[in-house]
Amino acid sequence: MPTLAQLPLAMTDLVRQEVATAAHTIVVKVGTRVLTGADGLLNRQRVETLAEELHALMETGRKVVLVTSGAVGAGMGQLKLTKRPANLAQLQAVAAVGQSHLVEAYDRGLRPHGRHAAQLLLTAHDLDDRTAYLNVRNTIRALFEFGALPIINENDTVSVDELQTTFGDNDRLAAMVTNLIRAPLLVLLSDVDGLYDGDPADRGSKLISTVKRLDESVIKLARAPIAGVSKGGMASKLEAARIATTAGENVIIANGRTPGVLAQIAAGDVVGTLFLAQGQALRSFKRWIGFTARPRGVLLLDDGAREAVEKKGKSLLAAGIVDATGAFKQGDIVSLADAAGCEFARGLTNYPLDDVLRIKGLKTDAIAGVLGRCPYHEVIHRDNMALTREAL
Image (spheres, rainbow, N blue to C red):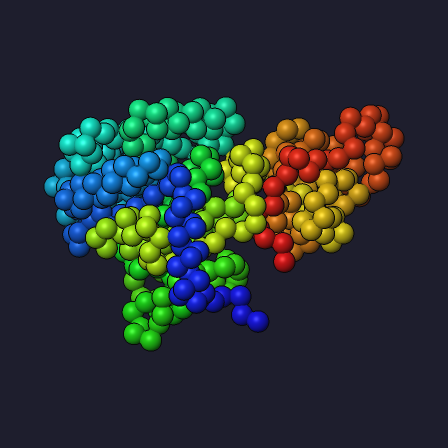
């Protein structure tokens, strides 16, 4: 039975209406290609039009957060560059120049409505550290109270990885922000109408309206060789969709150049590709464990331990651990992987690496004999663990 399918249109209408109604908070991510012209420079009119649409969305009573690309394009325009710099330091400098102009363009569209653009530049550390993570969330909530639009971007001036890739990491950042504020809907605005069952340039390819389960059959659509750069962008968006839907939220990929696209989505119209949430929404703490904080090591589990954790909701005991790698201490987050090395969960470890290597494979009542103590029966308690992919 195929797992990749379009729901009947009438049913999809009902599902879209339910998703739209439940979306009291929406994270909107807009890509560089939506905001720039063919010359790679920022299209200020398009930015201001998007700001108008975001204001209209907020006027419905919804809370809205924007994750935006475009700083480099804005900087190129200000510096009168015709070609994107290849040198990393120059890219960072261009982004630094462009960031203020990008936010100012949004603010110009919001200002006539009495709203303000609020800039938040984040690094991985800001979401990796638990205290900083909560501070970011509190700031966003305060901005909601003021009726401002939080505009979030990766801090390009210090983030090396983003500027070394074609599409950056803003799709993933948007998924993390979705989990941070527990937004029921993430909207990824691209320069394509959504996910197709083939090459979008092929007239025979069809737009997939709804994805019920984001499994390998879906992911491989983004790996197919397609001319241009949009396919790599779709792979990034599918990863963001996986993060958000696994945590229990819905995701829509749509064309950001379509006039009124956000209004259509808010009305429950059939626009783009809808990725349905998988299961119940995770608690905030588990979202941070599973999809935001970076793991400091890996625990390899045997098949029995994997099944107990993944399918039975059990804690992880030392007996099920085959090996451990990394440089983690007690309280750090570690990945749980199967025999093939594929991660399926993450959790807070009760034991540091050295102790885990000494007690791996042992029954709980044997731990004290090896360590001289047994402070915890579980290496990772189930309350401090989150699955990072759907159990097969």
